[in-house]
Length: 138
Picture 1 (cartoon, rainbow, N blue to C red):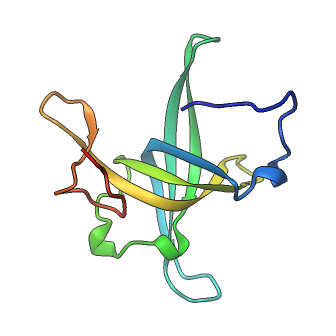
Picture 2: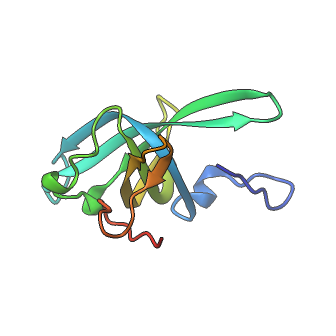
């Protein structure tokens, strides 16, 4: 994960909500499906743990992000790979921050299954077998 600062002051959270994109591979820690919304459709919400290495502190840092799928909620048969403990690639818009947990909330635009190849390296599956709503070019 990389971060770019433009200018000498960081913008307020409200200034970047819905404008900043974020992408990464996370390990699913919680999955919920609810219809507590105005349209009464089922919406998927996923909490995923991410990890990056802080070179200044010389240590690994773990954090969670809440991913809201809303209208991008896949059919259950298409989303069997989104389960606790599985690695999933997410991309979306940063929309807010959860006050109690301080976790960022992201509106999911794309997601994909991550598979482990013969050499046990993480790879996103190729076009012929990709799962999710992302088209990956090999």
